[in-house]
Length: 128
Image 1 (cartoon, rainbow, N blue to C red):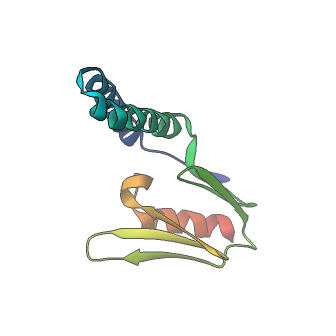
Image 2: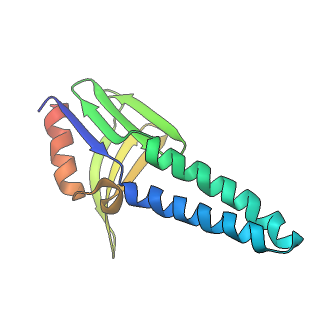
């Protein structure tokens, strides 16, 4: 394997889009105070939906390094900058942690669409 690409789950983007449409409809029928709250929330939800649906791959890794999309930013790091890769098990979830100096990138199974341990094995294979 030369490149690992994990695309973002589109369900969260579609849910945000549905929420934006619901808030836009609420803006039309609400009183002035409700419009003041619902209109900006609809715009924010729409922007977040567009980001989720058009943002590209969630995680991309190759022999050079790793690129992870975290919210509104993208973090790129060469393998020499990656201090630690590990899977953390919580009471309810497994999380993939990528420690890049002062930044810790955390990806859940839900966001990855795969088991974090499987992604960790693929990342370690690319790193070595």
